[in-house]
Image 1 (cartoon, rainbow, N blue to C red):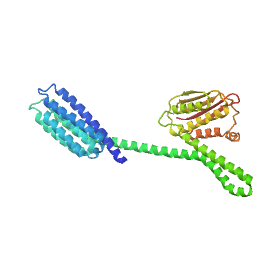
Image 2 (cartoon, rainbow, N blue to C red; image 1 turned 90 degrees about the vertical axis):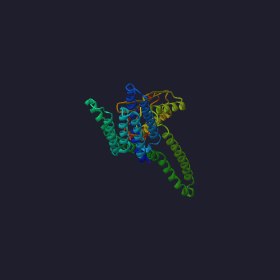
Image 3 (cartoon, one colour; image 1 turned 60 degrees about the vertical axis):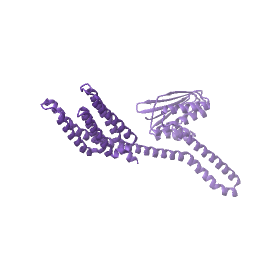
Image 4 (cartoon, one colour; image 1 turned 180 degrees about the vertical axis):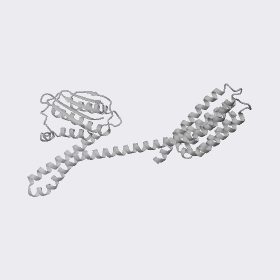
Length: 386
């Protein structure tokens, strides 16, 4: 079904463009011709036929674009309109405009097969030209009139080539978008799997080990069994909390909005929850989906650390774009802490939140820098590709 839609998009769109272009050219030429004829009624009737034909063609191609796959009825009706214009106008310039437009429409709908009706329009144009040219006409005028019908063949060939090119472009675009969607879906699944592995899965594995040891401990070591039961209970509660946090993290960002709006929403909700004012400075940015997610989680974790450990009176959050990178900065005026030298020291000091932020930044090819000292507050800076 998708391939069927792809193949009719280009001909239907170009067909509408040809109909509009032909109508504009014909009506303009007819309006000029009204000043040159003694009786304008036949010309007005021909212009009315062009207007009605154009409106009908636009309606059909807009509401039922699949008719582009069955061009014979459309081209037959359009040829009848050209003959009607010829009968009313008597071979004036409106007829030639209609004939060229009909050839172009045939090229759009029928491809190179349109050279057959275009050749028929050309032959008809030469016949009309021979009939309307007076004997002894100016050679320059005769040359122009006799050369004009060949435009039918050129229009048909040009329209066929343009339609084929646009069709290939539309097909390639659809493939690129589908590939991007598949890649995004795979990345999202991988990210979700990583989050589950790093949080809920590890916790549940510990609960499982404790639960396996519980039956044997009940018979031999009741006190140990009681401790294991507590471990299972706390582990299950922790897993549920981690699952809730994971779901909340997936809902942090609305992908159809600017990422600065997401940053503002996270800060506003955090400030309302903990009563700590936040000064915001953001610029509109739209980073990739993975970058948006990791930055949102880093911001959430940094603000959580401020609320739990900093005893801060004010927090400043800024999101800026500099060249090819984004900079997210979170600063608080709290108590600060002595920063260990490396990640191993952070683990020893139980700073697992900072470790997670470092790992999240690295996941999207970014870097994280933490500056802190006792009594001087803490600053977290994340730099990621834009």
